[in-house]
Length: 170
Image (cartoon, rainbow, N blue to C red):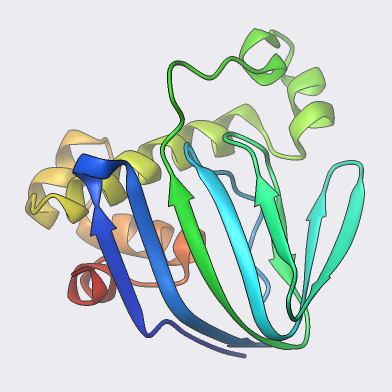
């Protein structure tokens, strides 16, 4: 497995984060979602995206748009692509939020309510890291056992350690 990102441009005041030149080989993400709209523009190769109801192969020259809070995962072969995360305008309401049964929640999303809550905390951590907050403060304030636990969870969700994310954020 090889995954590297060349540059992350972060413009929180504009509600925009751009990952430029992401290059992956046989790298599969775990089930996750984003609070923002995610646009994936495949430059070369192909990438498979999966969600609860099926999957789609996105090839060179194609762009995939994933709505906020839409649980998905990506994987497959070798691909280079750009990813754009655009903050939604207004409050996003989904059927996931209205779901009361943990079993029904898992059927709709493919993840447990606990995994969903952890990912919400990780999204908040990513936002705080991009705004210059200290790692120790973030892990404590967001309820992680310690910085090591936070770092492992962050890398599993985003493919980068918190330090790598900060280093690549411009």
